[in-house]
Amino acid sequence: TAERTEDHHLQVLKESETLLQAKRAELEKLKSQVTGQQQEMAVLDRQLGHKKEELHLLQGSMVQAKADLQEALRLGETDVAEKCGHIREVKSLLEELSFQKGELNVQISEKKTQLSLIKQEIEKEEESLQVVLGQMSKHKTDFL
Image (cartoon, rainbow, N blue to C red):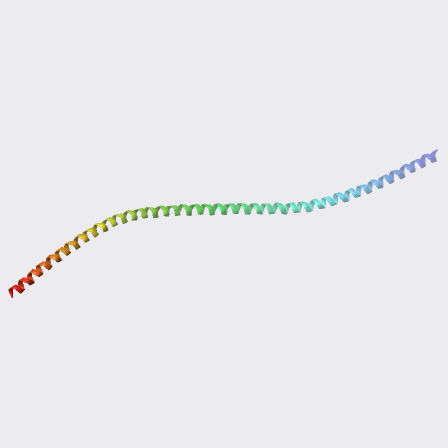
């Protein structure tokens, strides 16, 4: 029975050793998987770092682009305001010139009327002179 107990113990030890080897193999397999996953995580971490850096650069570009657009808009609004001011000034000058033109047209019309009256007076004077000249020339011929 001692022999049987010893055989039994040997059998239990062999089974335990087989089980231990199986567990060691499983542990090595798990360690290998963990190592592979750690390497994959390291690659993903690097990619994430690159993506974060790209995102940061894009955000910076967006901030700069927004600032540039706001500056362009501000300059455009200033330019529009200045041009509106110039347009108002020009309109005011045009209104003033239009008023002056109206006044000058009235003066021109008055001067034309005066000129026409003066021409009529000159014509009358010339007619009178012709009459006087005619009479003088008649008196001359009568006198001679």
